[in-house]
Image 1 (cartoon, rainbow, N blue to C red):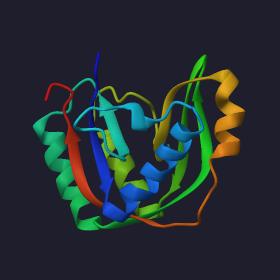
Image 2: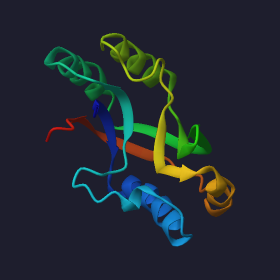
Image 3: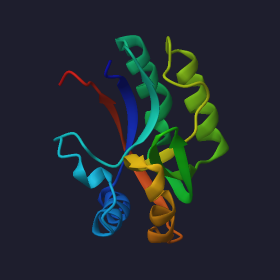
Image 4: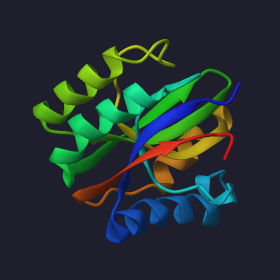
Length: 158
């Protein structure tokens, strides 16, 4: 079942930073989010994903998150998630106030996809285990700061 989500989107410069990682993976012959051709595919930081996100939660997100925008974050190490087919992502460091606010928002959501919050930017999904080391070797790391400037409600039905 597709999940609804509340997400933060980076400004144009931040999108370019993440898309550069997508491109590097793709040029190395690896899976990347660059392959996702959906109109809504954009670099994002998921705050919460669930089967449903009601208008009350959406209003709470606006109330809690909007005053914090823009939110400065720092992508750091790589993260490998999953079992057989893996997701490669960059862990994102956030200020304590942002972490506390997101956890408060998540507490208002019925049945979030995962407990807690592990802020990350997805670079590739469905990566075979045999390609993980190549992905790690391919992805460099620039010490950058991203500016998350927009709160988005993602609806899989639209």
